Image: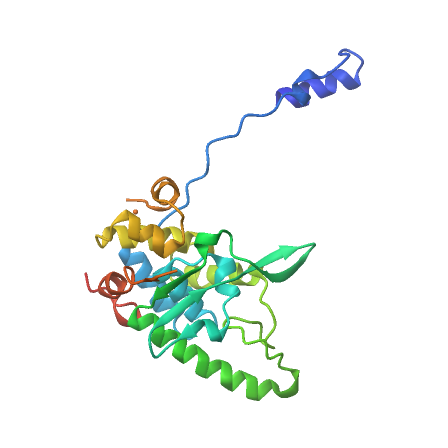
Length: 242
């Protein structure tokens, strides 16, 4: 407001120079993302059943992947038999287009153990994707993406946001952002008693500082820590078991 008032005075010739415009504005407090309760998370998983982004929502909520990491996954990153997932790349926006790029940091490249119900959601997703590929035929772009568009190309993060919003509103939870599922994963793991250091490993943080200050709201070797606690908390198909 001060800058606007002085700018008006400058235009009227009442002020030679608007010094407020050249003074750096101090950063405001960082917005703290929300985190779902166990009951909200279960409601979300139930509402997501059958949605094209069901597996993406399950994976984000149980393993804490960043939105770009989700969309950057390829099937060769996934071992459903061993219930392993490798995070090696992410979708980034460059010059108005979405492209595959590196993960946010070196520590973001990680291998995670999948909860059993998450692996099953991915298995069902793979089956539906195979059916879609047959329906589309030659129009399908076989890039090996786990969460592509309807023709196999990179999915814009905006479409992920819209899809999640549809599901959260259907669940009666209002609007949620995909990154808030990452916040929720950290909080749920913490609530399940997972040590902070292991939560940081699941999220791909180099240290516990960011995990503690930003993501935990109550919160490469294969990271085993998250799989069993998430399975106990949320159970198969979103049923609350704790």
